[in-house]
Length: 172
Image: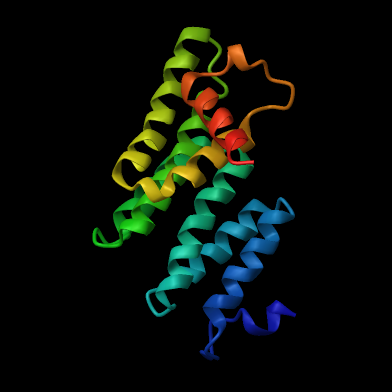
């Protein structure tokens, strides 16, 4: 059905939204090249700003899900530069996405000390988000708790992960 609307010409008023939605479908299906192609089309300057934002965000997510940490790093850098400086919420959201990219880049590191250092650096991104705008604290802690593997020992977690776990548990 989306193929009817996801066309380059003529401009039917929903082309870019259709590309975004179809890209999300491809992303969920693990069809990374198709997802990335649709997201690229949805980033067109003629697309509504919210569509361009989502397409750029979803490009990073698709790169992460495909396991291409380098592409995700490049995409999140471009995404952050694209967001207007005065849009603080969008900037902070992009920083949180940057945490996901940095954490994913740390995952395959074999050396324990180097991996821990990369993870601490990634957590610093989230710390900076909370420091800049305390309204993001709940979201940051929820994101951290959601990524903790089931059955993980509290003592094996990094301090910020422990704090997030305690905070979320205290919220009921």
